[in-house]
Image (cartoon, rainbow, N blue to C red; front, side, top):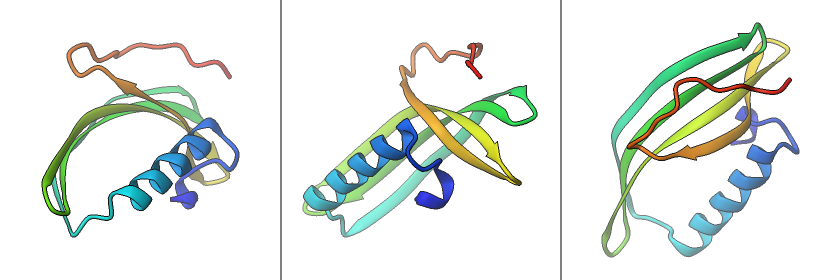
Length: 103
């Protein structure tokens, strides 16, 4: 996970918290990835962009849990590598295709 994040960023802190919570409370025995769709890609400069990823997956332990959502990612190029700086969960019924990113 860390290789895709900017250390100390909002995304880093939030995703570490989420992963620890999910791993601690819900270790799953099966994972089924159904959909991963990337769209609404927008370049703001040569080193800042956003995109949305829609996912549908199932995690099973004793019961099947469906996870469906869309996340808008803000990526920053660090050297030759794109890393996640921030993310927002998007309402699927109203995806945003235009936004302003502060540099």
